[in-house]
Amino acid sequence: MSLTQADGLPLPSTWRPLRQQSLVLLRWLAVIGQTIGVLFVDFGLGFPLPLLQCLLLIGASVALNIWLVVRFGAAHRPSSLFTAGQIAFDLCQLGCLLALTGGLHNPFALLLLAPVSVSATTLPQRASTIIAILAAAIASLLAVWHLPLPWTPGEELVFNRIYVIGIWVSIVCGVVFISAYTSRVAHDARQMADALAATELALSHKEQLSALDGLAAAAAHELGTPLSTIALAAKEMRADAVPGTDLAADVELIIEQAARCRAILAKLRNLGNEAGDPFAAVPLTDLLAEVARPHDGRGKAILFDAANTAGPPPVFTRSVGLLYGLGNLIENAADFAISTVRIEAAWDATAVSVSITDDGPGFAPELIARLGEPYLTSRPRDAQGADAHKPGGLGLGIFIAKTLLERTGARLAFQNIAPNGHAQVRIVWPRSAVE
Image (cartoon, rainbow, N blue to C red; front, side, top):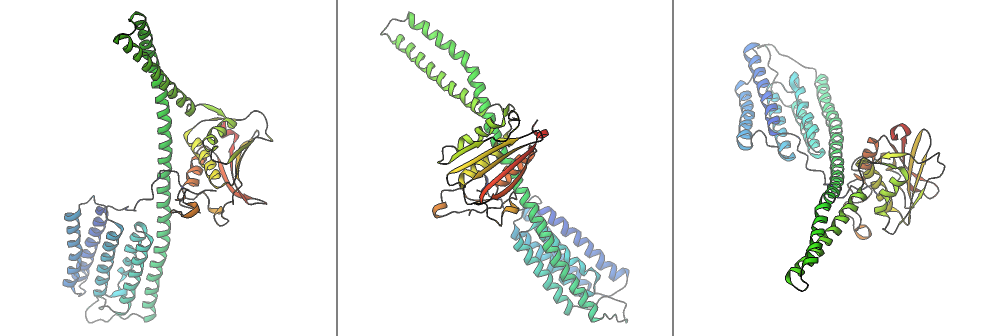
């Protein structure tokens, strides 16, 4: 069964979540904090440190901020590569500042984790991994090479080697954990945001089609009366016109074109009737036949069964999400079926269920537990050979169908049924949600 995206949905866009203004603002906060810390240690506590070199490093961040604002503006959204470059600069600037002020002996060495957290939240996995490796490398260098920690002149402050190694291990472990955990959480959030945007796009497209059908039917109804008047007046003129004259020919042309317009309006009325009122109530059996009809002429037999039911079929309110979700699942089944798609409906006093089963190869066993997640597909995006005619897979089709149907109160289950391993999707609504 197909795990593809709906037709016309775009590929996920390049992720650019940060504005330049946010990066500049964070860098200004770092500049202010570093400046206050350096001046307080030198003048407030009286601990000597290489003040000029520290201020030059802070000035480099100031210069970068000014250049970014002048060159790109605050509203610019930098690419992932450019953002990674800026975060790498901040990491190196902080590492150099720590090297001048005690290395890992400095309590502010913990701030090495901040750029790692920002990169893991906003950058792709490869870029955030590079930033994490850079942070670990800087922490390793600071463990073996740094100037003494600023302290009271004439008093030597000695740190046990095991303690320094412990600080290094804690920072490296923090880098690894923050990078892995935050990156994974942010990746899942980005996937869900993109997939939900695609769902809204598909639903909006369906709503526009339904609205267009309604407008077409309304226009046909409104134009019918004046067109009938024109045809009636033309027929009266034909009775008074002398046969064979130009006037008679023009009147015949008017009558002919009026009849043509009425035929066009009849088609528009039929279009509106086929689409149906999006808020109309319809029995379940009619609803399933409606959504399956577009896929019935594809060389696959679509069979319906409503056995073991109690009473008349339940009545659903026709909605765009319901039609799209059911239609997408039936289309996927028809894509992968060898010859037959079976749609079984059942209902009782407590629940309504629909099962869609195809006689194809079934779901991939390793994917069954994850079906319904966005961007999960068993079909290559650029299919070749025998699959070249099939739609490429973004893995949004099942996700969109599942999301839309769950909005109607349904619960979906995916399984391969024995003994042939055919794919089956089972949709269950509580009777209260239907009524």
